[in-house]
Picture 1: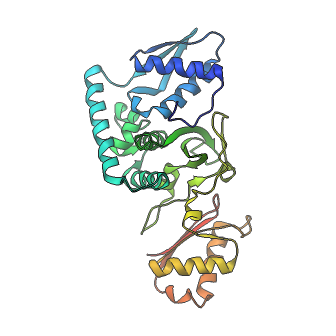
Picture 2: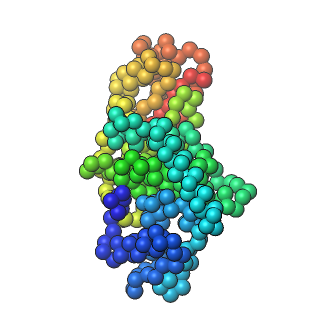
Picture 3: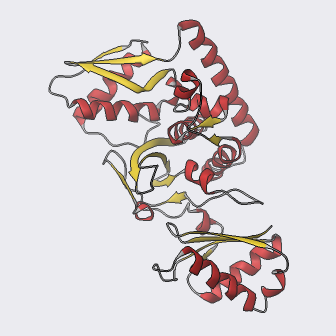
Amino acid sequence: MNRSTIVLNLKQRKVYDKILSSLRAGRDCVSLPACCDIQECFEIYKLLLGDYPELFYYDNCNISTSGLKMYLKTLYNSIEKFKKIEQFNFESKKIIDTVITNKMNDAQKVLAIHNYLAKSVKYNVMTTSTKFASELHTAYGAIVNKVAVCEGISYAFSHLLHLCGIKCSVVNGSTNKIGDENHCWNMVNIGNDYFHVDVTWDIESNDSINGICYDYFGLTDSDLVNRKWRNYYHACNCNSYNYFILSKAVASNDTQLCKIAKRQLMKNKRVYLKYTYLDKKMTQEQVANYVFELLQKNRETCFHFFGRFTCRTNLDQNIILIEEI
């Protein structure tokens, strides 16, 4: 578990090791320890696949039990499995060789992997092929097919970070977002710090014309007040890797907001920042109107606003994006 960020007690670790041993041996039946909780075993199986996404050929959606036996299914026959593994490893190495350099520190590597997936993978839950539908939930779907759901995207992120020597796990949780109640994202460990990254929601939130979305990069537990997850994970209290803190784009008053906007507008026709001071009861439209009018009235930013602009607000994370169309 040296690649993992999850925290298990001795009993849970025994189940984890038992399942992992069976998967590595290619078995489709796991003998579970006595007095174990079956539901917890299902959850540990999912946690394990998040730590070992290269085992994508096991079906993570269809699991059955009988007594103390857990029966697992594989997605492919032996010949298909060999070809899929070969292609998966080839594409994974290609990605790492393309986006990672020896000069990068761990934080830069995490950002580079995030950026690759955010630009390359399409979020899609609809497909006509049964086998392809299963692959949507795997790292293979995101890395090879470039199409996946949140689970597959999270597995791919975890796998690529492991190849960089960075600890990462998949968080299986839930949100209050209608249609996305069951949701997966990632927890990353650098040094003594742990933080959340949700590549899927950055893909879904990205209606930007000029760049990638970072609304859900480097978050703490308190940043995810609208989500729930089981206590299998470390506490995430470090905000040092939050994208807006790293890019010095957090405004705590109008003056700071205008200064950040001026700096960003000098580089491109785009304002992308996090605010911490506006009334949380404000609607998306109210936040957008307030910030847009503020920048139009400010003498150092107003002359940038000629032409047509689009505006997106994220009330969940207190983020606003304004850019020229």
